[in-house]
Image 1 (cartoon, rainbow, N blue to C red):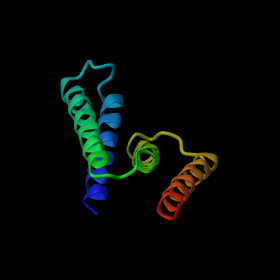
Image 2 (cartoon, rainbow, N blue to C red; image 1 turned 90 degrees about the vertical axis):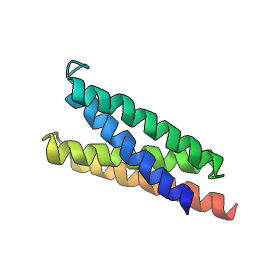
Image 3 (cartoon, rainbow, N blue to C red; image 1 turned 180 degrees about the vertical axis):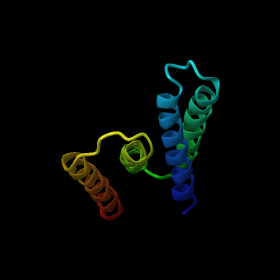
Image 4 (cartoon, rainbow, N blue to C red; image 1 turned 60 degrees about the vertical axis):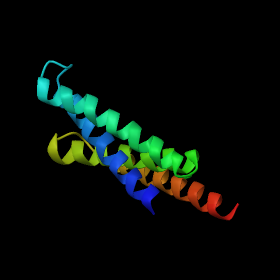
Amino acid sequence: MLAYLLLGVAVVAEVTATISLKLSEGFSKLGPSVLVVVGYGVAFFMLSQVLKLGLPIGVAYGIWAAAGVALVAIVGAVFLHERLTPTMIGGMVLVMAGVLLIELGGAHG
């Protein structure tokens, strides 16, 4: 359970860093630029701890990547007024379904 909690922290840190990357305007703004570096550092450190706790890398990375993509797209649409089409939403659902199948396959394989 701890592995999934740390994975959640990694996802939030990565999403924060990615959104901050957009807000940094090419690293020309200090505050968001610092959040990029710190956020990615925390994300990768937490991901390394998740792997150390024994969560398979395919599952951990799959959840991290899928959740990150979905959350960045949602945050971009809600707060940055970026476009989110039905096709994009469908793609996110398919990616998340794929990650779920990887997790289920790992648990029963």
